Length: 333
Image (cartoon, rainbow, N blue to C red):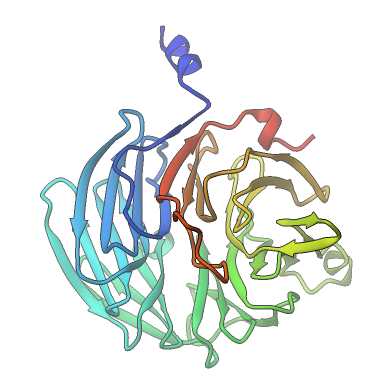
């Protein structure tokens, strides 16, 4: 009976009660494809039961929220334009300001390895927070670069900054970063994500490009790194180039999804350097992507990002799609 129900669910659907402004992040709960949290410039943090297609909880504040993360299945954190880190309890509806940065908090990640929360800010610092004590337990300068994107797996952290640098940190030894890299992409970084096996990272830029990089300095390993063009279209011999705003890895197959301002989501096999599939065009730019931990579901945040010189006559409403991709779409061939 159970398998029949799973087979009958639609391959893709739209969540009800989406945010009303730009969707800054969509993230699935730990070890679950049932719960999802979404943050937005409308100042809301929304908690969804995906299976029931219902918004279970909505927290509102005055400042746009730039990122969010699950700490555990009932506790969620957010970083906002008012510089503050907030902790929410989905069951009790309690909300606490845990602390702040000097500038807006751009990135929030759960560091399971130390059971803490990491925040990255435009104030050029990453902070580590002990959420039980509700206090900052570490402040780390990011080589004078504003934090634009950050990714954490186990002890490893990669931070992409405003001056096209990538800093690699180890949570076991935070007195200094363990590596500093120049971005291999010429233009501003939009997103960075560690490989699930932590051997490297993928990063994207505003200029329709993605780079696949490896951490090991061994020349043999470095030979495998590459960058490629994507999220571009030709129209009457004019090439339109779009920012690649979002990246997410499939934790099981180690393939990854990219989302761009061309309203397209692609799935890539980075090891064999090929595209596995392209989904249909969405209503507007892809602002955020997140695979569930088992890769069975992909959350797609769509919202207009003010990229066009002239705004469209009718700006498409923000939307969150949940897609259940097939092995054909996500598995290495």
